[in-house]
Length: 140
View 1 (cartoon, helix red, strand yellow):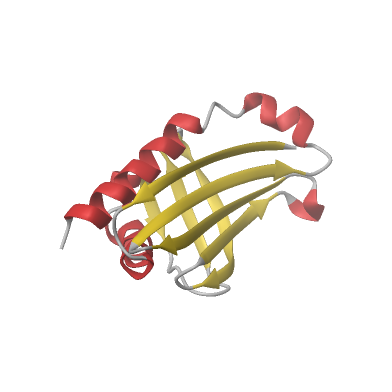
View 2 (tube, rainbow, N blue to C red):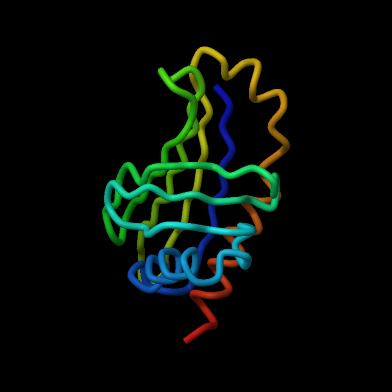
Protein backbone atom coordinates (compact mmCIF):
# COMPACT_ATOMS: atom_id res chain seq x y z
CA UNK A 1 0.00 0.00 0.00
CA UNK A 2 1.28 3.45 -0.96
CA UNK A 3 -0.01 6.71 0.52
CA UNK A 4 0.44 10.39 -0.28
CA UNK A 5 -0.95 13.11 1.94
CA UNK A 6 -0.91 16.79 2.78
CA UNK A 7 -2.37 19.02 5.47
CA UNK A 8 -2.74 22.78 5.67
CA UNK A 9 -4.27 25.31 8.06
CA UNK A 10 -6.66 27.75 6.36
CA UNK A 11 -7.87 31.00 7.91
CA UNK A 12 -11.48 30.57 6.84
CA UNK A 13 -14.44 28.68 8.22
CA UNK A 14 -15.11 25.12 7.10
CA UNK A 15 -18.18 26.02 5.01
CA UNK A 16 -16.16 28.58 3.04
CA UNK A 17 -13.32 26.09 2.41
CA UNK A 18 -15.79 23.38 1.36
CA UNK A 19 -17.48 25.76 -1.07
CA UNK A 20 -14.16 26.74 -2.64
CA UNK A 21 -13.15 23.08 -2.87
CA UNK A 22 -16.32 21.86 -4.56
CA UNK A 23 -16.99 24.93 -6.72
CA UNK A 24 -13.34 25.45 -7.64
CA UNK A 25 -12.81 21.94 -8.92
CA UNK A 26 -15.80 22.33 -11.21
CA UNK A 27 -15.13 25.86 -12.46
CA UNK A 28 -11.35 26.38 -12.24
CA UNK A 29 -9.61 23.02 -11.87
CA UNK A 30 -6.26 24.24 -13.25
CA UNK A 31 -5.69 26.28 -10.09
CA UNK A 32 -5.63 22.95 -8.24
CA UNK A 33 -3.22 21.20 -10.62
CA UNK A 34 -5.98 19.52 -12.58
CA UNK A 35 -5.87 20.03 -16.33
CA UNK A 36 -9.48 19.11 -16.96
CA UNK A 37 -12.43 18.03 -14.83
CA UNK A 38 -15.74 16.53 -15.95
CA UNK A 39 -18.78 15.72 -13.86
CA UNK A 40 -20.51 17.02 -10.79
CA UNK A 41 -19.31 16.65 -7.23
CA UNK A 42 -22.44 15.15 -5.75
CA UNK A 43 -23.08 11.95 -3.82
CA UNK A 44 -22.49 8.78 -5.90
CA UNK A 45 -21.66 10.75 -9.05
CA UNK A 46 -19.04 9.75 -11.59
CA UNK A 47 -16.26 12.19 -12.37
CA UNK A 48 -13.29 12.21 -14.70
CA UNK A 49 -10.13 14.24 -14.33
CA UNK A 50 -6.82 14.78 -16.04
CA UNK A 51 -4.00 15.71 -13.67
CA UNK A 52 -0.94 17.84 -14.36
CA UNK A 53 1.04 14.81 -13.20
CA UNK A 54 -0.20 12.76 -16.21
CA UNK A 55 -2.02 15.06 -18.64
CA UNK A 56 -2.67 12.36 -21.24
CA UNK A 57 -4.49 10.01 -18.92
CA UNK A 58 -8.05 10.38 -17.72
CA UNK A 59 -8.89 9.09 -14.26
CA UNK A 60 -12.46 7.84 -13.95
CA UNK A 61 -13.65 8.03 -10.38
CA UNK A 62 -16.76 7.73 -8.27
CA UNK A 63 -17.68 10.16 -5.52
CA UNK A 64 -17.93 7.48 -2.87
CA UNK A 65 -18.68 9.73 0.09
CA UNK A 66 -19.96 13.31 0.12
CA UNK A 67 -20.56 14.64 3.61
CA UNK A 68 -20.59 18.44 3.31
CA UNK A 69 -18.73 20.28 4.76
CA UNK A 70 -16.61 17.61 6.41
CA UNK A 71 -15.51 14.85 4.08
CA UNK A 72 -15.44 13.74 0.47
CA UNK A 73 -14.00 10.48 -0.87
CA UNK A 74 -13.23 9.56 -4.49
CA UNK A 75 -12.48 6.00 -5.54
CA UNK A 76 -11.24 4.49 -8.77
CA UNK A 77 -9.12 1.69 -10.11
CA UNK A 78 -9.09 -1.58 -11.97
CA UNK A 79 -11.85 -4.19 -12.11
CA UNK A 80 -12.11 -6.68 -9.26
CA UNK A 81 -10.08 -4.40 -6.99
CA UNK A 82 -6.80 -5.43 -8.59
CA UNK A 83 -5.59 -1.86 -8.15
CA UNK A 84 -7.45 0.88 -6.29
CA UNK A 85 -6.95 4.52 -5.52
CA UNK A 86 -8.89 6.27 -2.79
CA UNK A 87 -8.58 10.02 -2.33
CA UNK A 88 -9.99 11.51 0.86
CA UNK A 89 -10.61 15.19 1.57
CA UNK A 90 -11.31 16.09 5.20
CA UNK A 91 -12.05 19.46 6.79
CA UNK A 92 -12.07 20.10 10.51
CA UNK A 93 -12.67 23.46 12.15
CA UNK A 94 -11.40 25.18 15.24
CA UNK A 95 -11.80 28.82 16.28
CA UNK A 96 -12.87 30.05 12.84
CA UNK A 97 -10.10 28.32 10.92
CA UNK A 98 -10.04 25.03 9.06
CA UNK A 99 -7.56 22.20 8.81
CA UNK A 100 -7.65 20.66 5.35
CA UNK A 101 -6.31 17.12 5.00
CA UNK A 102 -6.02 15.30 1.70
CA UNK A 103 -4.70 11.76 1.25
CA UNK A 104 -4.56 9.18 -1.49
CA UNK A 105 -4.04 5.51 -0.76
CA UNK A 106 -3.25 2.97 -3.45
CA UNK A 107 -3.95 -0.68 -2.78
CA UNK A 108 -5.00 -3.99 -4.30
CA UNK A 109 -3.08 -7.10 -5.38
CA UNK A 110 -1.32 -5.30 -8.26
CA UNK A 111 -0.48 -2.14 -6.32
CA UNK A 112 3.09 -3.25 -5.61
CA UNK A 113 3.82 -3.29 -9.33
CA UNK A 114 1.78 -0.27 -10.38
CA UNK A 115 2.86 2.22 -7.71
CA UNK A 116 6.43 1.93 -9.00
CA UNK A 117 5.30 3.78 -12.13
CA UNK A 118 3.38 6.51 -10.27
CA UNK A 119 5.38 9.73 -9.97
CA UNK A 120 5.79 11.49 -6.64
CA UNK A 121 2.42 13.09 -5.96
CA UNK A 122 3.57 15.21 -3.02
CA UNK A 123 4.30 18.36 -5.10
CA UNK A 124 0.88 18.07 -6.73
CA UNK A 125 -0.80 17.62 -3.35
CA UNK A 126 1.03 20.66 -1.93
CA UNK A 127 -0.06 22.76 -4.92
CA UNK A 128 -3.65 21.64 -4.46
CA UNK A 129 -3.67 22.51 -0.74
CA UNK A 130 -1.96 25.87 -1.28
CA UNK A 131 -4.44 26.83 -4.03
CA UNK A 132 -7.35 25.95 -1.77
CA UNK A 133 -5.87 28.03 1.04
CA UNK A 134 -5.25 31.07 -1.17
CA UNK A 135 -8.71 30.97 -2.72
CA UNK A 136 -10.54 30.41 0.57
CA UNK A 137 -8.65 33.17 2.35
CA UNK A 138 -8.54 35.75 -0.45
CA UNK A 139 -11.31 35.32 -3.03
CA UNK A 140 -14.70 36.71 -2.23
